[in-house]
Image 1 (cartoon, rainbow, N blue to C red):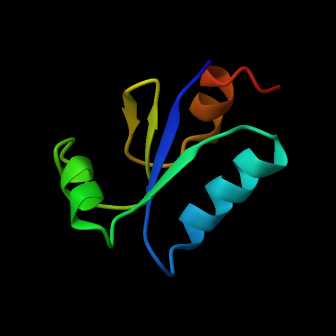
Image 2: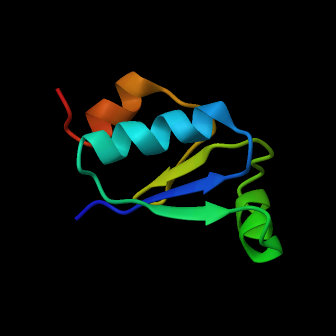
Length: 76
């Protein structure tokens, strides 16, 4: 099973977009809101400074790349 973690924050339209996209495809993910300093620090450990920051099976995605996301998740 693929593990997806999305680091998010409030008032982030791209965060809402990717969460809705995955939900519409019935793909489970874990959301980590960076208002929690633990999650913010986790994200910064990857040198990520913008949301959404996405991990798919531990592989970081620093921006939304739908082609890459669909390929990694086998979505046609």
